[in-house]
Image (tube, rainbow, N blue to C red; front, side, top):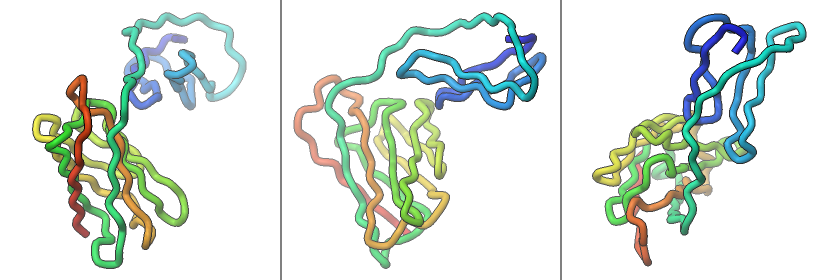
Amino acid sequence: MDGGTFEDNGTGNLIHKSGTNNYSKLSVDYDLGEVNVWRVSGVLSASGNATYQPAVGITGSAISGAIPITNQNRGFNYTLNMAEAKPRPGTLVVSYIALGKWQDIRDSGNGQMIGSGTGTILFATGSAAITLDALPDPDSAIVLSYQESRPDPGFLWVILGGSG
């Protein structure tokens, strides 16, 4: 577009890869199926080409769990054990409250967790390690939600573990 090449990073942002970049931000709204573009300055009337792989949102029952935050386990680093119901790639969301605001860390589908923290997830074992950007608020919880990798999960228990 406009002499530049951009690539979707899987989290709704188009990242400049080569050529001209006259944009301050390019984003993809997956639900609406639209690309939004913010030009650095001036007015532009141009055309662009896009290639894409059609996809649909993953549907089905979500599995969720929580780690209560106490003074004893409040910290930046936590481990998650989801061996009994392993997450499907791209579906794990870990949310926590810091300074009264919800923060999210998302599985980008390739084993990396990104957002208001970082981490890794091993889909084969169902284990994940996350590092939060901020301390979670006392007396709150770290909440996780995901789709199981098996097509029919049935009723399952999720065992979680936290460490400060």
